[in-house]
Length: 502
Image (cartoon, rainbow, N blue to C red):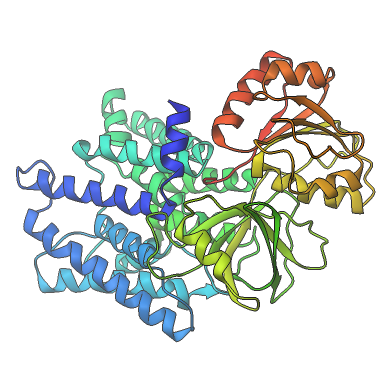
């Protein structure tokens, strides 16, 4: 099941998964409304939906033109749909005007309430929250209704699973639901009523799955994200009133966004392409020069945005691990393979001439080596999964950290292995798994076997496996299989690469 989920969800761009999920919930809500199974009037829903989405798109287009950036259609669609689910649907002119203004504020805020090209607040939350103080419309969270919850739970799970944010969702749900249930019981309610109020008739699952999980308003490190989830959960669940401000899910999220802002490097990273190198047949390294200095840790990843004509289903944004070291002359390099039937994104990326400007939306990731340089390490790479290790080993070598590193490199073609020169120069022990090649391996390297790398073969070649911290990077199927297999052979500290699709 896990392998099927990884393969299926990995083929869908993140933005598409979100807006398709929202559209399914919207269609279900409209259908149920005709049978009076959800509270809004069906014609109010039919009128409010195009207003919310249309004004979000228009505001995004205008905002992008003002700051001379490109608008992202799918992002605008998601923002409009979120406003649709938050604001009270209406057939009245004033109600529709409120929805239109909420979507306009939301769409424009991505560009006009931003720091160095990155929006600070969740756009839909900001647009809807304004109308707590305005006479037009009101955020009612009508989506929090029992019959929609099964779809919302499934969609929220898929989104959190796809982004590897299940831990964030779990922390938020446990903290927020515990507080709400405790408060309900303390006020004399029954346990059944408390559960119904917290889950069935609440926006809790929708909130965490579609809004708190927004990558661009989350900090880069896991402990930071979980801290934000806990803070937002408390503000979400605990009633309070301070002057004109009072407890509200939208305010909780906006405060969380503001706290996250101080955790992270908040700006769009503008870069120019300086070099394209084919490291091996079909494997390319692209090197970019950021227009401003940036900081990152070896093993982290970035998201590139390459708008292009006739984009396929996977869209115009893609995640890439940074393959260059943090001290590589201020440059950022990414490395990827080009399949026989490549995506429109990779084709557009490879077609870029030198000097082309591209944007990265940020840098994230916890797949970093321990600060304790004396800890022995086992780095297992499947194919292009070697990229974070290239960054980490290059950095460790330049800093003369003296780490005890064993690299296991699994590849279907071991005649020309990307980063072989770097690994050889660093002097780390390398064990290669894959078909024998007429090209000899670098001096000192070992050939493990021609078959698939398994826990058993690794334990034979690395007898001190249980003493090493293990890092796995590669296709999800390989990572998932090895993670469970290595535990049987004594590995306890296993880290896997976060990546929204290979």
